Length: 254
Image (cartoon, rainbow, N blue to C red):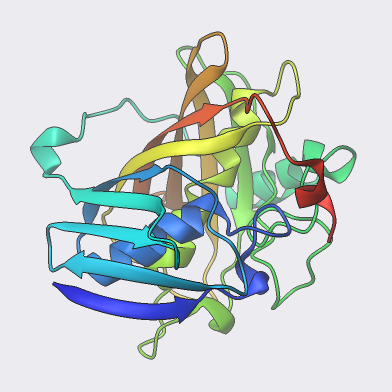
């Protein structure tokens, strides 16, 4: 078992005081060194506070705070455990850029400083993934799409995007598809996905998301990352989002 103590920078927040859910999941993925995984987010992971990451290579991982409260868990899954999903038709790059300009988060956003999707984050600071409503396709409810140009601040030494940022990109777009027809505050509860091919910084990608199921307080969604030119699938995830019963409104103040 490997044990790492770290402090999650506020740069990687979702809500201002806690980590972006997908990025936090990706930290566990990086620690466990697995390509396909299921991560449960049990409690918000605080930023600028010491946390502990325990991992067993290729198998499992856990994040907990200094009181030993479990914040997130990971288990590795196989390709056979990950369902095959029908994929939408991917728009051309110019169309994806146009769709991004209709991002609903430009007008209403619960966390406008989110590292992944916050419109108040500048280039080379936030990932600035903005998905807007895409043309309707049969079988894809609340389909959304957007352009993503990853920069060197989320890169590993070899120029590929780090896993935590990839999982961040697989997070937020799904949340907007979940509540596109009735916006409300929701948070990521569980995400299971796989990285097929790592994106490269400085190249264009199209991120798409759609809703699979709506329940009372829960929403199941899909998010996928495609290479913009070849429209090749790079990564995909299924996620469960929940409307929290008791939300601390102080965690919306930057």
